[in-house]
Structures are given as structure tokens and as C-alpha cells.
Amino acid sequence: MFTKEDIKQIEQRGSSVQTVEEQVERFRKGFPWLKIVAPATPAMGIQVLDEAAVEAAVKYYEGAQINGKCKFVPASGAASRMFKDLFSGLDALKAGKELADDAPAAKFVDQIQEFAFYTPELFGEQTCKCPEYRKDVLSKTLTDEGLGYGAKPKGVLKFHKYTDGEIRTAFAEHLVEAQNYMRNEDGTANLVVTISPEHQHLFEEAYAQVKAEYEAKYGVKYNITFTFQDKATDTVAVDVENKPFRTETDSLLFRPAGHGALIYNLNQIKEEVVSIKNIDNVAHERLLPATATWKKVLLGKALELRDVLHSYLREFDQLTGDYMPDLRIDLPAYGTIGDEDVYQREDVQTLCDEVEAYLEKELCIKMPAAQTCKARVDALREKLNRPVRVAGMVKNQGEPGGGPFIIAEKDGSTSLQVLESVQINSADMVARAALANATHFNPVDIVCCLHDYKGQSFDLLQYVDEDAGFISSKSYQGRELKALELPGLWNGAMSKWNTLFVEVPLETFNPVKVVLDLLRPAHQN
Image 1: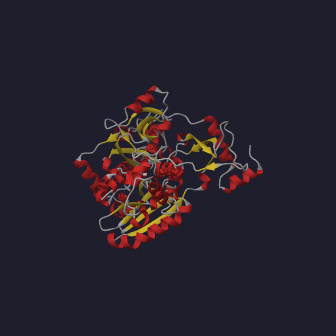
Image 2 (image 1 turned 45 degrees about the vertical axis):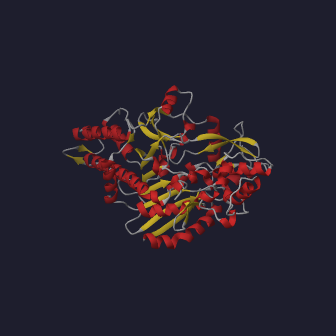
Image 3 (image 1 turned 90 degrees about the horizontal axis):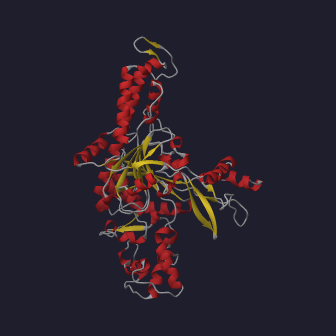
């Protein structure tokens, strides 16, 4: 299948022929549909907290023992999709066409003075509906004639302006958030920001502009790490016949494998507690109190869940002697460690009953029947000893993207998962009904606990469901191709985590998917 030149190309990327062959085979076989049991709703699967529960969660977070905190911000890629409508408008004007006044590009020009990146020196003091003015504004926004925003990453774009004259980028707002709810006891705030290598200098410049000011203003010490999506995680593309796609130079075409590749970056973090939030989901600082409160709620619920799971694991150790798995010693009162009679004891099986009830009630994990008592304990221990994630969910307002569901696992258990629409089999009546009855949307507002009950970091790559990726249709220079997306960071890459969903207010979700979103109240003074 591969030539000597192909093999050299593959190995230079840090991959292997076997990996690429497996990817090609995946295109041929496809991905299995996940079996949906039901949508996760407030009736089952999503916790809706009252005021007392909110206060209790915040208090739990503020009093918890934590071995380091870090904020993880996916921020790679240019903002070209954010400006798609503006590019279309500019192309139309260059072709001699006029824009309708209700066209997104026309609305943008008409309200240019409302954007944080507006300056009269660049755009003029008076707006005009004439085609030449509109073309000039669009060109100066998108191209190197002015701001060059069409090719820059979202993180360094000016999102917000303040009454005191300060202008903040999306990245700057993440710095402000981090010092509020992710500050460590020593006064540091750690951020890991995933970026593209070609954009590193832009982020470093944006950071340098505010670092000293923010550290003095907020009394914080920032530790920033810029990290890249490893080229070795790129996946090979294939043509419509599922044969490796070749470019005009006859070389293989590799493509970034989606945000699922970022599980490798997340796996490098040594801190115990990590908060994940997309680069464009920020708001004006006046909304920070609400944002911070609900982030602390998620943190508190995650730490509470962590502590319960760890407590159960320690109790199993104490009752069964599993903390000494390499020793077989006689315990007169209990039997021999590792023998079935140890696990048959009433106190052990009572604990199993309690754990199963807890998992089903709190995490929607319904365990299958085990053949032996030891197998039951082993299965429960395996379920308990996993990374923890607590994900905020907002009421569905028609936003595109994933949502929370209860699914059936391969081992016969059930679990809470975030699914994208492409993972849902529209030909399955149960799946269609679940999608129709879904009430909430995934805003990517996640808190993770990454250490096990013995204080060691989990190897997150061991908790990925490799069958949870998907295949998408793309093109290259007008030629159709198929692309392979790795299991998404908050989908299949976290499939085998212990998951809890909590409803959060819509006001905490303020993404900027298109440039006109910056005119929404959350992004204005």
C-alpha cells in the first residue's frame, strides 16, 4: 500500500505504518453507532441545584485539599470561520455586487464602531452604506491592509472594551478568569493553552502586553504554557474508494484529527484539578461573578465526587486486602487474601450494594450482574478508579453541537456521555426519540480530577473509546476526500471517565462563533 517515500513521510511525522494502516482500515469498517438508552435530563442524568446546593458546592471547593490546579484552554486554529460571512460579503463587493442591508457583512460594517477593535484612525469616524466604504471596512478587518483578523487565531482578537479605555482579547479574559477561580494556594494561576505553532508569537505578544499589569492588579503570578497538537496525531485522508488520498505531488495527505487529539496534551498536565473552557467562551468582566460562582460549583461537585469514589476504593482495600495484592497471607477472621471467600463476606457484599446504588443514582451507571463475588468487586473497583469529569450543561436553545445522553456500554453497564449529532444513528427510532427529547446542550464547561486515590496521575490515554470517532467529508483543491476525526476531547476521549452533569445558567455560556456575536450584551459595556 505504501512506497518507500510514503514510509519516510509517515515516520518523519512521528507516526508508524501500522497506525496509518489501521486508520485506512477504520475508513473501510467505519465506526459502530453508540447505543443510546435515553437523553440525560433533569429527571435523570442532570443535576439541577437549588440555592443551598450551590452554596454547599462552592464551600466544598473552597475547603477541599487539591494537589494543584490548572486551566486548559483549546485555542488552536485561525478565526476564519468566525469571519466566513464577512469574506463572502467582501467577495461579493469585489465582484461588483451590492450587499442587502440585512446581510451579516452589511450589519457588521454598519455597527463597526461597537466592536472593541474599532479605531477611527483605521475605519474613519463616519459610517456609510455605500459599497466602497463597506468593501474598505471589510478589507481592513480581514486582510493585512488593516487588522488581518481573517488569518489570526480567536485568542488574540480584541473582544471587549471597557469604560476606562482598556481593550481585552479573548486570551486576556481567560487570564482574568483564571486568577479568580483557579488560583493555587501559593498565589499562582496556571494555564495550558493549545495553539498552532505559527500563532505562538501572537499569543506571546498578547500575553506580554498584559502580564505585568494583571499580576499587579490581581496579586497573582501566572504560569503559562503554550502547547501544540502533535503532528503524530494527524490522520491520513482517503479518497471516495477508501484508498490513501494523494496530493498533486503524489504524497499522502494528513489532516489534524480534531480536538480529540488534545487528550495527549491534557495527559501531560501534572496538576490534579483542571478546568476546561474554549477560547471563545468568555464574557465582559461584569459577568465574572456569576461565571466564577458556577465554575466553583462544578469544581466543588467534582471534588466531592472524587472524595466519595476514593473513599469507596480505600474501603474495598481495607475489607479485601487488595492494598497488598502480591501477598497471600492468612487472616483468621477473614480468610486468605485473593480467595473467593474473602469477597463473599457480608460486609464486602454490603459495600458492593452501597456502591452500586450510589453509581446508579449519581452517575447513571447501572452495573451488569457478575458471575462471582470477586468479579463483582473487581468490576466495581475498576469503575470507581477512573478520572472524574463534571460537565456543566445549559438548556438547549438550538445551538449546534453535542448534548448529554445515557448510553449502553460494551460491558453491559450504562454511563453518561456527551454525544455529537454525527454519532447518533438517525435510522434508529430509539436514538431519534432520545435526540428529540433532549433538553440540554454541551457548552464545554468542564472540570476534571486527574489523580487516582493513591495520588498518582491517571494515564488518560487508557480511558479513550477508540470506537467513538467519526468520519467526515472534506475536499482538497476541489477533490472530494474523507477525513478521520479522533474521539472528541469531551466525547470519546473521556468516554471511560466517571461523569456527572450539572445544569448551569445560560448566562455562563457566551461563545463567539461569528463576529456578530460580539454585539451581544455579554460582550458589550
